[in-house]
Length: 89
Image 1 (spheres, helix red, strand yellow):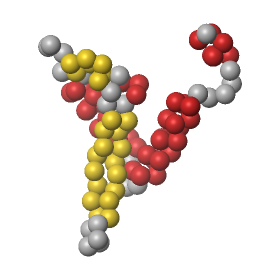
Image 2 (cartoon, one colour; image 1 turned 135 degrees about the vertical axis):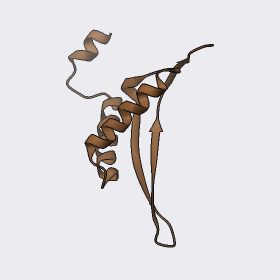
Image 3 (cartoon, helix red, strand yellow; image 1 turned 180 degrees about the horizontal axis):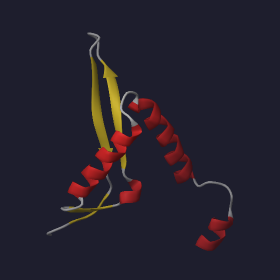
């Protein structure tokens, strides 16, 4: 069945969701250059990979900006890293 699926030109729901997420992340990053986000992601994955077997293709890392009631701006680094297995078990 996978063979026929690859012949279809229609993107899968997963591909559509990933593309939408990328657009959202580009908008949310704002002041942080994409190269810096990429470097942060690479370094985080390098460290985590020493201890945990992760699904690198499905990792999502973004910077979210929050405005509170007092007018202060704060940012949060948000990482969604799917875990396959924890090493050393």
